[in-house]
Length: 266
Image (cartoon, rainbow, N blue to C red; front, side, top):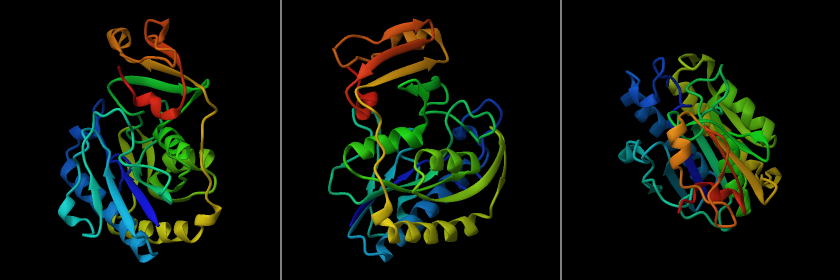
């Protein structure tokens, strides 16, 4: 069995952001990085204890270099970096599942902690086939194109609810309760680590029940930007090789062959 542990920062225990800022501006960002590492390590240990032959911990927040790698189980491989034309590193049909650690709700969820979709400074929302989507949905759809299911998601209560609505078969761990972008009631970090370890083990035990999530394709992607200049200068190209159309000054729309093309730029 082979697994990818996809790790973000915003959804881990005790992570928060100041008003109007991203997680990078948090006064406890160094703790958040360490906690994300501990939560990822708990997931990896659970996978190995269930018989995994390979576990790749994918550091996928921001520039892709956020974790304290020496604190991860030494059996892991570690995917680092960003700014490539594919979303997942080395994902193919040979993997058994994806585990999502520290994820967060989509951009428009005003009650979720640090809610955004891929870039808190760039997008107001992302829609696929007319429905708003978040990072859980898009990352799950890309994995699904390879026949790989998402089996576990951890994050705040708004994130885990969003994940269950899209992927009802998964196991989840709620790390904290969110009241707004800037306020949470978190579980103790050590308790979350233990819950993630047990939750991932439950997910692997139910591996035969897990399903692949996919968007209907070709898909229509709609991106609404926070600034008109960002919308104007985006390099998105549709499946016919043409620039995305303008829906209005903030919004670009185009058709793509598959979910992974969302991250392809020319």
